[in-house]
Image (cartoon, rainbow, N blue to C red; front, side, top):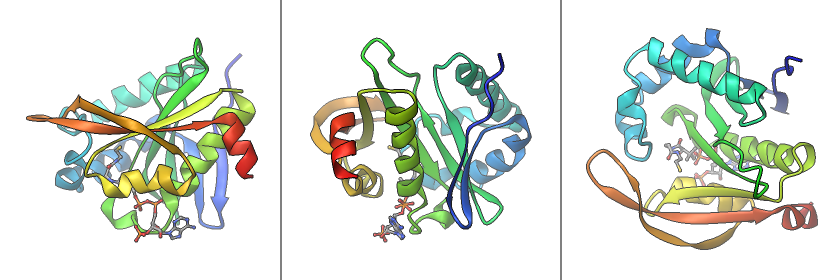
Length: 186
Ligand SMILES: CC(C)(COP(=O)(O)OP(=O)(O)OC[C@H]1O[C@@H](n2cnc3c(N)ncnc32)[C@H](O)[C@@H]1OP(=O)(O)O)[C@@H](O)C(=O)NCCC(=O)NCCS
């Protein structure tokens, strides 16, 4: 049976929707016009050089969604795509998942990602019944670190040289949130 697309209204003007093929052009344009800013922290920017590259990514995550391996959404704000949020493939064995995200620079500062993460955490714990959500951010990426900090994640440590960013390694802060901690906070 085909799963129905993910949809969640975050506020009056913002919603999360499963990424679909017809989003490819708009997402690619947002990436292409934000390259230097996104490239500072995301390792896949140089591998996204065309709408076709974005389409290939969308097809992969659509398949993963149908196979219960992932969820990938666009964040729509006032009718425009502001960025994306997704689970890395779900670790069913250990009942945990990592969230990845980005916004166009012009959409920062409005709480969009904090709200989107909150909805993805609800889904992980309430619908998927997972035990843990993780977020990993490079040391130095203060805006990204602020998202799990704002949501009450625990800082679990720094893993050294955990990610290759084009021409150098970065250390990653590991943030974790347990299902029991999220429910307690609510
Ligand atoms: C990481 C990233 C998504 C963070 O974006 P952001 O806009 O700082 O995060 P949010 O959308 O949650 O917004 C938080 C800001 O909105 C403000 N805000 C307004 N209303 C808010 C609300 N209802 N809830 C929370 N914050 C709110 C907060 O005060 C904060 O502003 P400040 O940074 O000036 O203090 C963005 O910087 C980005 O995409 N960077 C490049 C890619 C990247 O680094 N990805 C992550 C890799 S680990």
